[in-house]
Length: 107
Length: 122
Image 1 (spheres, chains in turn green, yellow):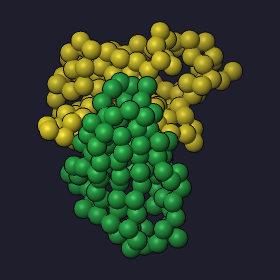
Image 2 (cartoon, one colour):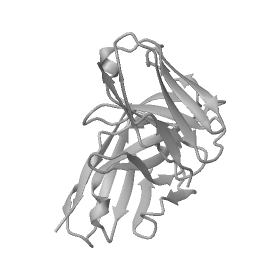
Image 3 (cartoon, chains in turn cyan, orange):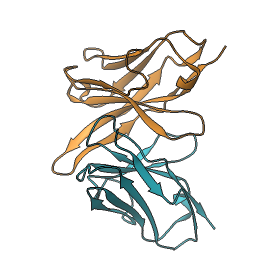
Image 4 (spheres, helix red, strand yellow):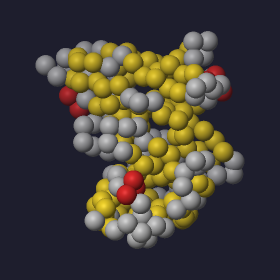
């Protein structure tokens, strides 16, 4: 199985900050990478797919980049409602593995 | 309304069986690839099973292969997960999720249900 490692696992930042989360794959996944946001007690919500394509309805402060084994999710100006957990997922090979998650907290 | 609604979760003893259902509405279920994803309490996400639109391709995570069986009834717009020989470590919220391919960007799980909790305990 392809392993995904997110860093950091925990992140604390202030409203308005630019925040970046990294996802590294144990082998190349081309651009078959998605990012999800999950709020407590809720299902994950798709933010980014194809490494860099913004899902319809997702605020433009979210962006993604990367190819192969290294990917990033960036929030350009952190908002209070962004405080939650973020996961990357590779969809290049089944099982479609997830990263361990990054918990983002507002200072 | 476009939605997925899971049902069938509950408390089951180790070694027992359970069947989960996922009812789809508001979109073309018969043309959609579907997935089961689970999340143990306080833990991350893990894909459990995948089934293509025609049931022609089916995949399982190693942890459930031989114990879980995924199926679908396109006439009823329903996805199923038959779980047998359940273990404590199968305790989780089980989500069904639609797989979507958007060229040229690729695949994603773009629609999720709210999940159903399966608790394996004596």
